Length: 207
Image (cartoon, rainbow, N blue to C red; front, side):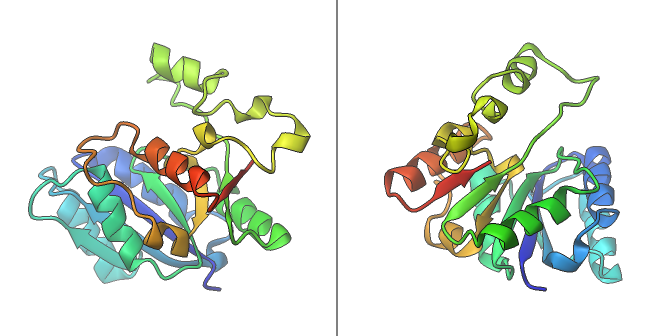
């Protein structure tokens, strides 16, 4: 199937990146995955060599290494331009999927035929890395508080629930409406994108 591109962006976090990729490789529903794209933002901790080996072995489809650090918005756009799947799951290197995540995302897409919608999933924090902000986010904060929505609102959620580490979006929408690369760090570049898409009535956000 050509349904899904998985895009991971990374920078100097080799150990957690390995956990991220191993979770993908052991997932159910890999038959839905067209390609796995990884963008390395000029890491110096052995990430490059690790990804080169995975590329040679065929575990990942596309590997991009930047010669200088460009920031999360730029590297996401680089990966989006390479994506071949109809939909794209953009992940940070610190996202560890459940075994069923890919399968459930893709079955949901097939069930509802979502060509102008983004499917938003659930998330659990690492138990040894729960800051006050993470606790708030996962217990009713806007980032991951979509579980509070009523059933009738789950098919048109607000843009505040769209964070790219837990959403699958039609690839063509992101190719035509890329991330704003003026954001140099991982702070609100996905919220800005979701606001822009919602304002243009391009997309709905489905829980």
